[in-house]
Length: 266
DNA sequence: TTCCATGTTCCGCA
DNA sequence: TTGCGGAACATGGA
Image 1 (cartoon, rainbow, N blue to C red):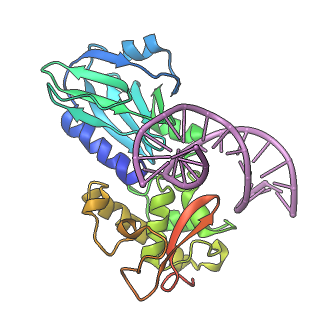
Image 2 (tube, rainbow, N blue to C red):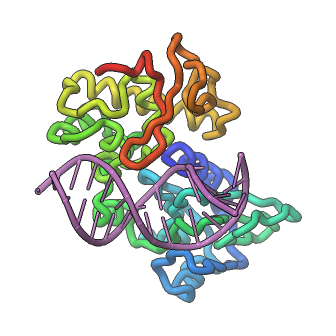
């Protein structure tokens, strides 16, 4: 689930359902998953406060606690994490690692079955991104085709691994890298130096349109257009865009799907 | 029962 | 130096 579009949906869920409500209870059951703050610190940072802002950088979600501009809860969703808004009486998702209960009965739950996610506390999301070496986020203000072209200018190797490298640009993972290349008509193993500056700028625009389209579909495969790769991600399927066939291969150790016809060249 | 999977990190190799 | 392949992490689902 959780690549940029999914996390953007989680961000809007938090923004719409969890801001400006007093946190009455903090339930914390990490059960071995990575937590980069002491439990007592985390509890102190949240309990009795309200969440006042929801931001995202790549696949990381940041929720500001209270009026202190330097106190943000950071969530990373790993492969299977999600964020769920609950109303009074709703059943809690399995494997909920962190749950905030608000005055009035609503709650926010962070289930993470496979524990590949992370819970942390940071002073400043930008500084965190900087420390982690995260590249620019596709949807942030001021990030555009030129940013993308410049960052990929000296990159060698295949385009798919470049798209998935969070230090170049943050947010795309295995699924949406494939989706972007499918829309762009590029083979996943196309070498980056073979792509012109114009082609790279065009690829950025494609990535953004895929991301926006996915967010519009609430990152839900069932709501995505039929002619996207995602609903057709199966070896041997007919390509929904041409007479080709969807093929499954392995690129950089990850399952990779592409159309053998319209994604053959650069 | 066995294999696979949306992420990240670390190691060794070329 | 950098990109890449492989392994590791934990666990539910096909």
